[in-house]
Image (spheres, rainbow, N blue to C red):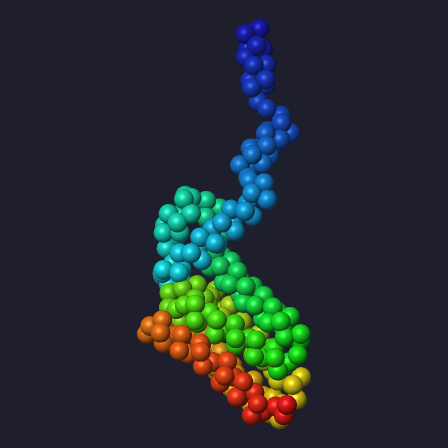
Length: 227
């Protein structure tokens, strides 16, 4: 009898109270997670590594194994930070879109928010990138490639960025009192699309376009705006 009682008390002692078990589980989860600041740093490191990687390889051929090699991290860490390949691509597209928008704002600051000069500055920035080769095929940008998936994050981000740029051009053309603001915006939009998505055969081709682009834009603006 006493032996049965001892065994019963031993079994009760071995069972952890629910509150203790939950507490230990929470501690393990907390210890397995990186602090938010460290997670953000890792996230930025991975995205910057992706930018460097896509200087050499097209974004549509993304391979997370290659990205893991580039960062020195295990692939599971990349998944842990972003959750999925699609989420990573969205974060990468968001990074490039934010950089593009920052350039637009900087162009406005340089122009003193004067609409005609702002239009020119936008295309001077494109020309500078073309001259430096940073718009060459395979290098980081949001390419207008025909992704099979119509909901591909890069495709959607590129379309959204184009709409935003078209709206900016329209606003500036209207502020400049263009005789036909919509036609001016459409013409400049066509130039921007071609300059930022064309696959130039050589660096000399892109530099030649870079040299002529600001003059061409200036001529187009003057044909719509009475200065």
